[in-house]
Length: 232
Picture 1 (spheres, rainbow, N blue to C red):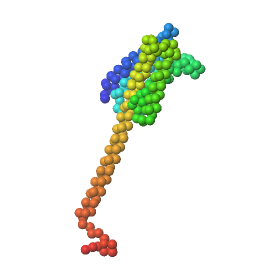
Picture 2 (tube, rainbow, N blue to C red):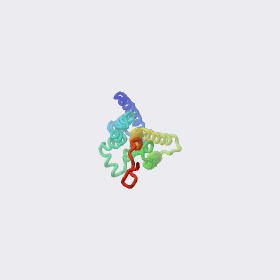
Picture 3 (cartoon, rainbow, N blue to C red):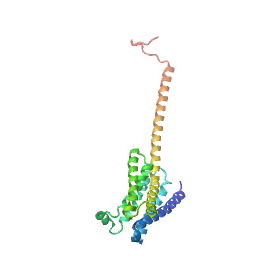
Picture 4 (cartoon, rainbow, N blue to C red):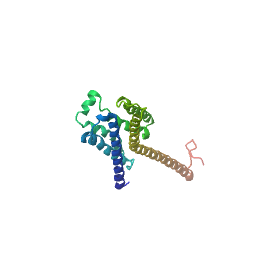
């Protein structure tokens, strides 16, 4: 694909990432209730900005060739930018270490990457492990609704919050699968090329052996009779 396709897909990804991050902030506001506050640093810098960047990179991954393996691997880890931007805020890292508050900044991107690999990774056993982890993470964020917001899942507001955060994680996992899918396609092509090369080598060796036998038979060279003389 050309540069135009890369730019288009990156821009579409950036818009989708921004919308996703806004929806995540809406979930956080619903979880905190009237205690939720908005700020340029906490809302726009720590949540919306990484949403734009991650969305742009995942959109770009859909246009990249599987041969760009190094770039795709970095893009596969791009959801961790949510954690990087969050921990650039003053005091959040200390709060995480001392009280555990802020763990979602790590949990959400890890869940996205785990789910992405489970959907499109290459190693089957690792896909099973990351798939189990992704399901547990979804269940964990749903559990924040009754434990943190004190909203029952049986009431409309609690059910809405649970549905919102669960579907947000699923969407992040689907988007995070894009670079892993490209990497898996690249591995398949490499293995296919190696198999083709191996098959061609066998065919060539067989052809050489056949030519050698035919040449020997056509030359009429006398064979030894075992007594040091040739048969007449």
